[in-house]
Amino acid sequence: DTGVSQNPRHKITKRGQNVTFRCDPISEHNRLYWYRQTLGQGPEFLTYFQNEAQLEKSRLLSDRFSAERPKGSFSTLEIQRTEQGDSAMYLCASSLEPTRSYNEQFFGPGTRLTVL
Amino acid sequence: AQKITQTQPGMFVQEKEAVTLDCTYDTSDPSYGLFWYKQPSSGEMIFLIYQGSYDQQNATEGRYSLNFQKARKSANLVISASQLGDSAMYFCAMREALMISSGSARQLTFGSGTQLTVLP
Image (tube, each protein chain N blue to C red):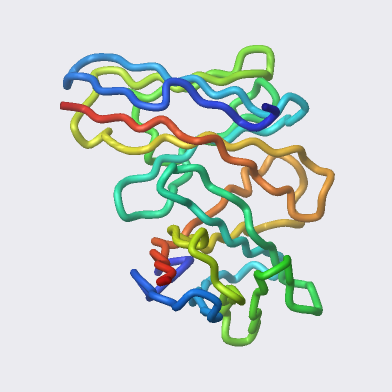
């Protein structure tokens, strides 16, 4: 399968624990995005990478969140000291830019986090 | 102000009928793109159709077409000949600043979605 993959698909954790998610983008894609989606809402932008450089972070990304993309391939999103408000679906998307006029973002299946 | 507004939390349509899902947007940027994504219960966002702000014609992709009314800032999705498999959440999204050089995130901004149910 050559699409975007994310692991794990589901994660249940206790409040205060740290969690880490992984995203493997489409292999030739240079851009990688993280979004968060809460129940009944559309995805909200968290951060993005151009190759290995993290170029922008939204205000939603508190100090407890950190993302990396070593070597410009896969990316990890870590949440430290999880809170119940962190419960959401975390979506990863990748794109190849600039090639197509609209630079379609391809999404992975998401990681659903539940903080108890 | 909301950048993307989807006013229909839920819609029902009879199988084989056409349905229109509404989307209005707000931007002062002259160069932007509008996207529709489908999200089935499995969670994956599936790209359906794209419309650029400078595109002269409405976009079409198979059974999907986009009714783009620039002056009204609306980009409604029309699904023709609905199928049971079309039942899903549908999101309208916008990407601004298309003409800015590389480095800008140009992330997607999503609406709150419309849950479409196709009835047999």
